[in-house]
Amino acid sequence: MDDGIRLFTLPEPPARDFTAHNAAARALWAAFAENSHPRAPVRLNTNPRMLMLDPRHNTRGLSYREYMTDPELMGQAVLEWNYWVRFLLPGDHEKGLPDVWRVHVDFENVYDAAWFGAPVEYHADQVPYAAPLLAEDTKRSLFDRGIPDPFGGEWAERALRFLEHFQRKSREGWTFLGRPVEVMPHAPFVNFDGAFTAAASLRGPTEACMDLLTDPDYAGELLDYVTEAVIARIRAWRGHLGLPPVWDDYLTADDSVEMLSVEQYREFILPRHRALYDALCPAGRRGIHLCGNAQRLFPVLRDELNVTNFDTGFPVDFARFRAEMGPEVQLSGGPCAPLFVGEDPAPLLAETRRILASGILNGGRFILQEGNNLPPRASLDHCAAFYRLGRELGGIPR
Image (tube, rainbow, N blue to C red; front, top):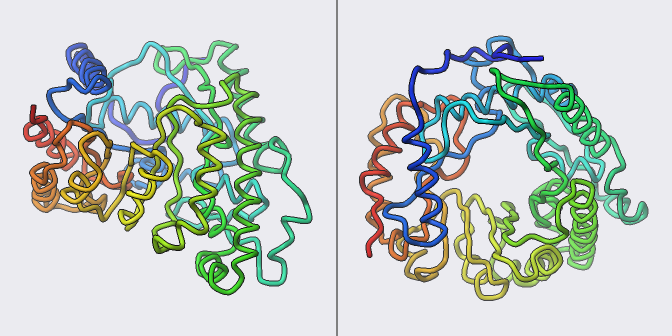
């Protein structure tokens, strides 16, 4: 069963030999791992929303409700997004037809709250949204249920069903553009978007922040409950997927901590982050993804939790980061994502020049990317100009 492009409107593969590009990309990332790279790698972070939410590509009108409920549509959409990445998106990633295509289950960012029972809403021209579950008069209801079954409930059962669908197709000879399709040993439930982000989804952002002030005992209880449940879930799912129980290199997230002061972070979130890292990455390299204005928390994460890899959004003061965090701490970041949309690339390129001249390249532990997640309808011409400039000005001082 060989599938071609059939969901999205995409151009034919360009007649280009990517052999030299791919060899150079592999060499660059291998050198980066050894900190002997000549320049900062450049990457652009995307997911299938790039096609789902761009009417130039989604001319069929595939909805997120269809995508999230039909494994056949999800698998095909993920493959076509991979095609878009490998043939159209600039960057230091391997391009062209792969030896093997890989698919995965994608539940966007609703999976944590949905697993706890939050209702998922679908709105036109948006990613799915997990609506708050815990109102003031029901905020303790989760505690009465106990820790959820890692594989139970609508969304975990759906993930299992989607995985089984992909695996069956792969066994039966699934191909895409003439190449075999394999299933990644991955599912949304081995990830975690963070204890406070989960609490903010379950309670609502305003309510979660007010809980810290007006009912701190409850806030701590909810954060402990979420952290304990997710650690158990991740361990169970990693076992199901045949993965080791702990990571050698672990990146978690918690975007909603940007709403907290350093003092609130230390009191409420730091202990839960410590529990997560100690359980899942006791001896490996620790990283965190934090979109938003969270830079004030970076020294605490480094000093208290030994986090040495920061994946960032915006705003970030790059000169301050390198001066404050030192040359050995890794940062992935770059111009704010909205600069990639629009007609004029000049603001994007000016900001890229400013960042690369800030001192962030000192020590070499820098990956140039958008901050953070390329938005749908981003200009590929802007992306190409960004990539060229990163290659030109991203040399590592030695």
